Length: 77
Length: 387
Image 1 (cartoon, rainbow over the protein chains, first blue to last red):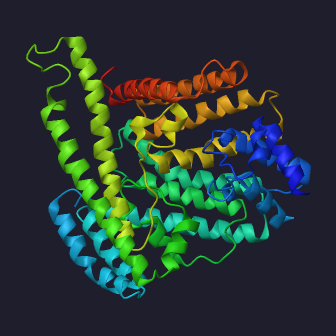
Image 2 (spheres, rainbow over the protein chains, first blue to last red; image 1 turned 30 degrees about the vertical axis):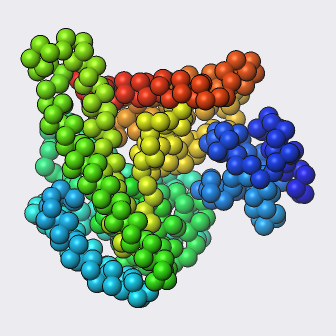
Image 3 (tube, each protein chain N blue to C red; image 1 turned 180 degrees about the horizontal axis):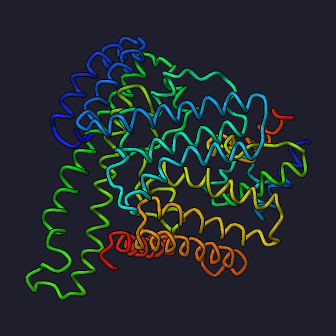
């Protein structure tokens, strides 16, 4: 898994190219991700990278930008 | 004694917390002293009723045993059935408290704060299931968390992993000073909200509404005025209480999450639920809606993921409705909010395609006005005055 793949996944899920343009954007503040989007994200993470993130471990303060999500996933690999 | 109910309560905890403050300002740990204060204040809150005290003690012991037993089990095994049984056992007392009165058994069991303690206990079982509770939990600390006196009666609902971090950290003198000042600030916001604004709204408007306006208002205007005044009353009363709870927690070094963030300027209904009774709505979001949607998505029983999400919203708001009480107006209140959220979600997705509702300050202002009125109508249902 590299960062590029994570960004591609987020672009598909959020349907917005801004993720590549500004990978430090706050996905929840900007309305790109909500609780429903989060579930789809967790399912996709499991499908694509075989990393299982429990919902209770996904807190919005630490998983709020594309860069941070990529970082968190890299830690878990 | 009702928590934050009268000036005597504030004077007593003010005195009891003096050593806490002195220790904090010298950057010394006050956690043992705070445990002692908690015991005294809990005795003050619950001590007037023997029945209530015994219920509370038995209930807390039951929850602690359940959490510890499930944690021990989870370290070795992870069966779904055991997990479901643990959750059901944990909410059983709350269900009994809600159902027994309907069966005419009023005084058998029940006490202040039973639902808020249940929320914390269930949360611990869910997080244990998710494998996030691997460290050994000290019984005293768990009891302190479940019965943390500033929030014991009506929240805000804290999270264990956050709480325990605060419990063990000793802020520097400088940081404690900030915590103390913000705590005192919250308490004064609480006085303003609960004892001034909510009091005035109640005594100068609500007691005359909707029908005793001496023909000053038509019946329809009376109902309308009631709807808005009741909404404001509800906010100032509960946000005031929550500010007390947050303020006292901070003085004790615990940064209990806030419950309200200017809910009446929400730009849409989703935004509203991120600002109103936040610790409760986040609890339902994380532990009911998201878990349900994830579980359904993985089971693949339904193809359309939006249908799953909508069922999830219905489940969330239905449970939130009946949690307030097993009465029709609470059920309808819940379903009303489920409908609002689903309609907004459909609109949001439609607009993503058609882009007919741009994002600017005008649409923002219109959004705030619509949301405010929709929310006030919800509180009108909630008040029970409609039916």
